Image (tube, rainbow, N blue to C red; front, side):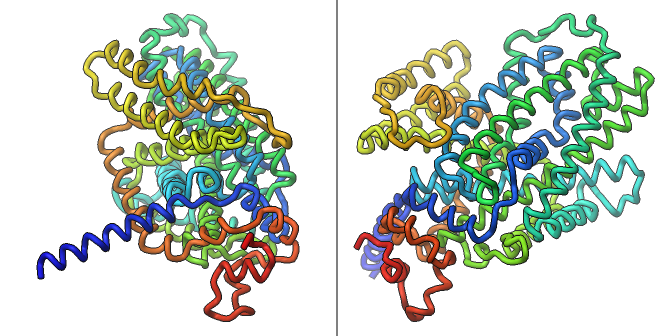
Length: 573
């Protein structure tokens, strides 16, 4: 009996593994994905222009980091040379930003990195990327809301029951609920709040920096790099995630005017503005006060008070709160749209894929996500999860770099070789990054890292990349070098996270994998997407019902997804 039970369990496990491998490797045709996104935009409308997208990206990226992170990194890591740390971090982010810009031009979908991965890497990896984006958007929004509550509570001397750093945060809960209700009206209305808040933030920040220029003492910049090059690199690692947020622009692509052109331009413009802002703030702050005297809790506020300009310190406090509000609102806008895209593919319950209201917003998804984030902001101190959020972000950036390489290799006629080559290169980068973390001697780690990565990197650089007959409006420069460097640096940063953060990230991925096996495989539309003729879908899309499941009634309750496609003449079979 025991042997029979063991044999039965083995067969069941093998069957499940085969099903996971089969389902997880399914891809959604890129042209079909683009056509589906076009259909969605025709139903929801386009409300965001280029300026709106830039303001959304800047508001979601800069936040309060310019007033807090600048001082922390300058005091602990790099001194006045923190401006070079920002330049290095910006360069590394730009590598991934080029990939985001190209993929947004090819596939302007609200799914962002999730949609990019689904069309290139496969369904399972795409689901896990979407699962990780929950860390970047949802959990980080709750953490920012609690930080906002702490800042407001301390500045206004509010009763402690409104915010307890180690307990309940009623203020954080109120902020998330208020922002969620605004976003439920749709981006047509919410964009005015985001635009106005970002412009007001920019005006206050400009006033602070202009006044600070006249207080600069150049002698405070000497020595410029007190901790040498290693300090600059350490500072870059600290401030790297201050640039993350440009990817949120891709999450609202389906509500943008001419997204294949405006979204890539907005992503790159956003990154330029953010770098200029951080660099200016770093120079002003380290010029006003010697880096050794910087207050890491409130550097700008303290610096202006010490120079006798307390009013500008209060302005910095106001701008800090405003920046946190912007960051939380943009994250709360992006998260439901990721879930919306996943529900559209059947990987999440259908409720997340519904749109309603005058702005045709994913209202149900917004309310459910907002409620979840509000509960987290109310109950859970999340500041300790910063590294975990960073890990989820890195995986999203990593997947987008891989997506560009895969598509370019596929276009060049190397699809059969591309999978093996990409797996070899990514694996070598991961192993090299891990070894550089554990090796006791840095020079030995560098030599081993270069040795491991050099061979697959050489093979990748030797691959011929042909020109496209119908290229997208934006193509990343420097392929494959830009993406190869982006992959390596992202994995290098991933393995620089604390061990506890890596462990929590692994647990989070296991939870996501379990949900995919329990729900996603059985409800996924992936098998139907694979059989869709992209040209037929593009031609028929004005006459199709976007919510695939809602039109099954005409075929009967037992109708399959493939039968629905056949009824609408969009399958190849």
